[in-house]
Every structure is written in structure tokens, then in C-alpha cells.
Image (cartoon, rainbow, N blue to C red; front, side):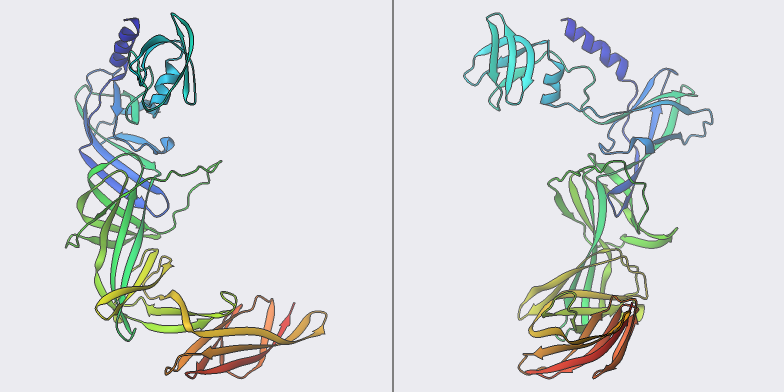
Amino acid sequence: MKTRVSFILLLILLVGVSVEASDNFVTVYNDDLALIKQVRTIDIERQDELFRFTDVAAKLIPSSVRLRSVSGNTAFRVIEQNFEYDLVSSEKILEKYIDHPIEIIRENGELIRGVLLNKQRGSLVLRTDNGIKLLPWNDETTISVGDLPEGLITRPTLVWALAGVKGDKEKVEVSYLTTGMDWQAQYVGVLDAKSNSIGLDAWVSVNNRCGTTFKDAKLKLVAGEVHRALAPESRRREKGVYQMQAEAVADRGFKEREFFEYHIYDLGRRTTVKNNQIKQIALFPPATVSTEKGFFFNAAHDAKKVEVRLTFLNKENAGLGKPLPAGVFRIYKKDQASLEFVGEDRIDHTPCGEEIKITVGKAFDLRGERKVVKSRKISDRSERRTIEIELRNNKEDEDVKIVVEETLYYKDWDIEEANFPHTKKDMNHVEFQVPVKAQGKAVVRYRLLRRW
């Protein structure tokens, strides 16, 4: 009886005021971060009454929490703030019931009463009228305790002590940052028969694992790299099982706009972002984009194989011209009556006007081989090398052009002579455009002078 009375008194002290959010605003960033704003109307009658805010993210960052009045009450202020997250579990209840009486019903129906002395992994130690008992603890064991122990709660809760309360209804807004939410773009492209254009659909996937659901939220997505202060210690991130929910394309989809040095995508309607859910929403209407298929040999990437890439410009006259958030590009192509997957790549945030290259795979019928055929030291600070790159085309009836990409990580260098035209892309890269006949081969040979 004593335990039950103590529990009732504790409830009276802690309940305070708690109301559901009337409005939710969710802004999600790319890298495991979200800004949450919620509006609630509270009715506090006494200055010493606590305001309890439930249904908050379990992974919120306590130092980022801010509570303010939006009713025009300039005297309103917070004098103390607590984040309570010691949630109920069987482990924690038993820990708090050490030295207190409990009841155990074993799988055979036997009832045992006693004082819990200790709890180890898989076993309990009880003092009973018949002495000390060591009892196995498993899924078939039923354990009864008197009441919920002090300090345990069922949901993460923010608790405030307030000053300047007028004793009437007060409209307040709470905002905080939380981990456990992120988003990424996903692009699905279907190549035409000649690989000259892509039918493109763009989606965003919002992943919510922060510990709570936001009903009828105004959703914003921020594309860009927001700098964050490094934590003293890295934390291991939990992984969960997610539910997939696809939203149909609608007129009230995302509208893109610039914000600071980032881009914001506003969803033109409200949506519920459930906990442990991946929500997919169309980013922009389907588009047809002009593209070019190319073959690239870079021995620094692969010593033998030739990469297949799709290249297109993010311009309006090419069919697109939209800021593209970072994400995965998946490419399909029709084979007779069905679509087949041909490869995928990840792109970075790409503004309008930039070129996009997607590596979709390695060409089956093309091969390359690079070797240094001659090397001679010219002085203590220079060397001359002769390099050969053999390209082989095993296709039966298709001539190809292969772009040879050479990576030259030298302080200073010059190509003294070459048997194919070349272009210096930057201080460390040069390209050769090499035509190769069907069932034939071509050899790039150049002489390099490098200095250090």
C-alpha cells in the first residue's frame, strides 16, 4: 500500500499541463538532421504549474530547444527546462525494484513471492520465506510489480517551469533540432532505343526514425551541405525496419527556391511523417532529357575494363534545367516488352548549367591495357617516360570512340609528343579521343616529361 500511495503523489506533482500540437512544421536536411517546430495552445492557471510537452522526438538535441509565446505576451519566459527520456522497459522496471517485493509466475504456473535482490542476464535473485532463490528469467516468465517506479515515463517529454504566465490561454511555439531524420533524392531514368534521351522521374525519400510521428506537417527539404559542430565523441546510429509509402504525383508537389547558400523544396500540401517510415514523394514532373552514351578508359579506376557513362547537361534546352539534389540515379532500358536495369550511380548536388556524368557499368566487349614501355632519368629533378595504351573493340559490327583518361599526379609535366590529339582537362588530367574499329584495336602512344 505504501508503494501505491507514493506513486499517486508522484503523479500529482509531475502531470502539470500537457496538450497535443495543433500545428507541425518539419524541415529535413540531408545529413541526419531535422528542425521541428510545433504550435500548441496551453491553459496554465498558476505560476508554479509545470508545462509538459509530449510527442517529441526521442533523438532531439536538448541544447537546441526553444520555447516562446506567439500570443504577444512579452513577460512570458522559461526559467527551467528538462528533457525526460528514461522510458519504461522491463529491464529498467526491474532495476528500480531491487530491494522491493515482486511476484513471479513460472511457466508451470508456480507463484513465487519475494524481495528482488539482484537481476543478472537471464536470472533473478529473490529472498523468499523459504530462503534465497535463483530463478531463470525468460519469455515464459510473468513478473508482477506494484506500480510504475519513480522517474520512468512512457514517452520522451519536455518539461518547463514558466514565468510571466497570465493565467489564461497561451499560444506557444517549441522548436528543436533532432537527429534520426534525413532525406535523399532518387532518380529513375529510362533510355530510349538509341540511348539519345532519358525519360526521367525524380523522387525524394524522407526517412523518419527520430521516435515520433508528425501529423499533417508542413514539410520542407533543404538541399546543401550545412556545417555542424563536431561532437566530442561519435555515436553509433541505430538502424530500424522501415515502412515504404509512395505519394502520388499531384499539382501540389515540391516548389524549389533559393535560401541562403542552399536550395529549399517546399511541399505544397500537408503530409503526415510517421515514425519508422520512408515516405516517397515526387520531386518534379517527368522530363525527357537529351543524353549521350560514351566509353571511358581510366587505368587508375580499372586496369582492364572500359566504363560506360551517360552524359547530359542540366539545362532547360536539354530538357531539364532544375537544381538537382544529391541522390542515386538508376537507369533502365527497354528490352523487347520489358524494362531491364542497366546500372546506377550517385550524383552530388548539381546546380543548373552543370554537366552530369553517370557511370552505369563496364562495357562487355571493350578492353584496355596501359604500360610504361620506356623510362629514362634526365636529371636529378626530371624524367622522361613513353606510355602505351592499347584499346580493343570486340564488337562484331560497331565502331566506337573511347575516351582515354590519364591521371598524372606530378608537380609539373608536359606531353612532348602523342599519336592522338589530347586535351589537358586540369593540372592532373589529360584526355585522348580514340576511335576504334569493330573487331579492331588502337594504340595510344605518348611521351611524357615530368619534373619534381
